[in-house]
Length: 277
Image 1 (cartoon, rainbow, N blue to C red):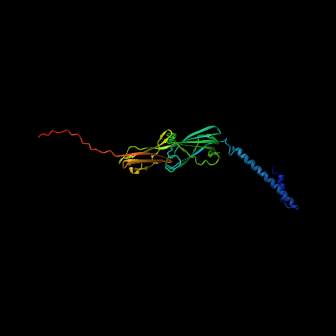
Image 2 (image 1 turned 90 degrees about the vertical axis):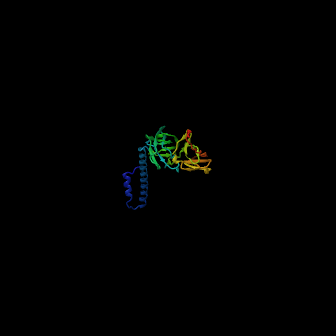
Image 3 (image 1 turned 60 degrees about the vertical axis):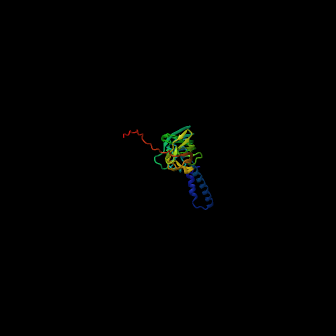
C-alpha cells in the first residue's frame, strides 16, 4: 500500500475543523494507521536490500581473512600457558570449503606478556571450522613439540574467530606434551657443589626446557645437602631427595651424598745419593 497524493490531501483536509468532528477524527486515525504500515513496509524493504547487497551479515559465503590471537605469557612460573614456547603452528580448517590453512608464527621479542593477532595466509570463507595450534620450543616450528590446543570455531564476518555457539572464543586451554620432569644429579659429594640439570620428559623422549623457570627443593633429609640456586652441595653422608617443579609439572630424584675423597700428598721419588765420608 502506498501513500498517494490523494490520500495525503485527504489527510491534510481532515485536520481542518468541521462540524462533524467525530467523523474527521475517525478518518485521521485510519490514515495514521495506513501511514504506519506503509513506513514499516518501506523500512523492512530497505533492510532486506542492504543485507542482500552486502552478502548478508551472517552469510558464510564471503571471503574474509581469519584472525587468530595468541596470548604469549610473561616469562615467569605463574602462568597457565607454555612459557617456554618459541613458536606456534596454526592450522585452521574451514568447513565451508573443505580447505586447511596453515601458517607459523614466532613468539615476539622480550619476556613480557603480549597478545598478538595473526592474520591467516589467505582469505577463507566464513562459517564453522576447526582450530588446531601446536607450540614448539624453537622459532619457525623447530625444536620439540611441547603443547597443543584445539577448538571448534566459527569464522566471523570480519575474520574474528568465535566459539561454536557464535559467542566470544575466550581462552582455549592447551595440553602439555610434558609427562614429568627428569632430574639429572650426579655424584653429590660433601663440600663439592654440583650443578643440577632438569629436562622435560615427553612421549618422544627428553625435551630441553629453560632452567631459569625451574624451581628446586630438597624435600627429604635436608640435613645431608644444601641448595644454592641450581647447585647442590653435600654436607653429610646419606640419602636425600630433590624435587623439581616447572609450571604445573614436577619430578623427584633421590641422590646419595658420598664423602669427599681424601687428599694424599705425593712426594717425588728421590734417587739415593751416595755419601762419601
